[in-house]
Image 1: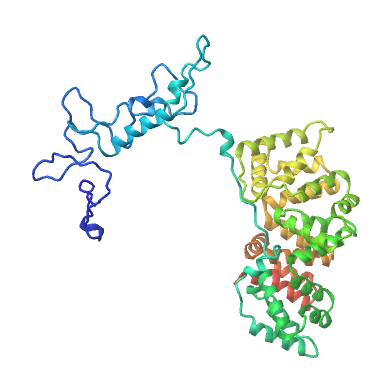
Image 2: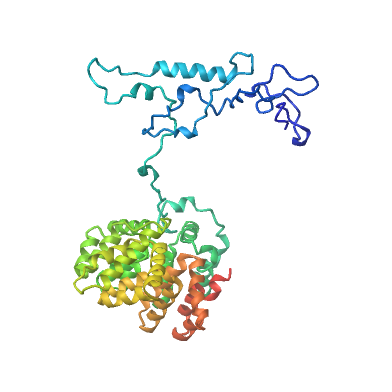
Length: 484
């Protein structure tokens, strides 16, 4: 494009044409044989005169600050205003944008209400009339309250919002339904076929498995969960029914069992390190399932006051969203506060520590651990927490920190502890939570297991008896579960 003539050149690939509404003002007296020149290409003015400024970036002297007045109303500083008013070509009248600017400035000045001070009364703002005549401030300087960072809420995990099932992309389940029918029609249920179909990678998303279950029931007029319950038994049956039920129903089931059993392991499994959206979905599902039970009161009756404050903070949904940034100054201040409270006198309060650790997201906790270790010593934060707290509170806070710093190692430790203690219900829940979390979480699990030369699949083979349940667990969380 030729910026002097307002035409498209041959390099653009478009037909050359004039710009009918070009804002550029042509020189009325072009030099013969040359293109008409526009602003910026005129000959220099005679000595003693100034080059007229561009009409789009200038303002008349009416809009300039007097040298003896300093504006304090959010206007642009005087140094950023043009020093000269727009001028027409020499010997010409105002045309185009120049004429518009002058007319607009006169109109704006006339329309402004001007308060005339009464006789004998001093005006509190002696320059009010002049200030009302200033250039209209389209973009005033914003105060700090208008620069808040708005973080989008973390969406619910797959399977925690039932409305997501409608938006799920349709999957062809015809072949898999035939396999399930064949397995159910056998005298001895074909458990191998069940494992092969239900652990297929395309059904790892709970919404996809929900579609398979719905399609099966519509085409066969049989409820898949009831058929599996009648054909299987033991831990294999429990795991398959939990897999079919989905993560939300299994969370509510596990939470109800945890409230009436000893220990807080299952309670921590359900509530710790969860997004606000997932916690809200669990609360709503629990209240709709157990209408006569108050979850908060049940937790308060199960744990002591200090631990209840932690759970109550989690249930309130005030944890930082996953996208909330880790601001260095704030994290460093919180780290210093934790150090002062944990290394001070024994009667120092511990509530601020609990609040900070329970309210931070994964990224903020990881940053806090890094800053704390850098300022006060390696693994100092874990050590200080262990010395300051005891019992269930110590176990809970260390688990939150461990998951934030290294989620893979935390998951691996949880699975190994469940296998060692022979708590199959805890192991099934943790294995399914990992499976539903996706391939990335499973890969993080296998990284520390390979680093320590103890592959997860090897541990499952070594610690679980031979049978369908072991094959199901290997298909769910074994190394081959992330190979696709």
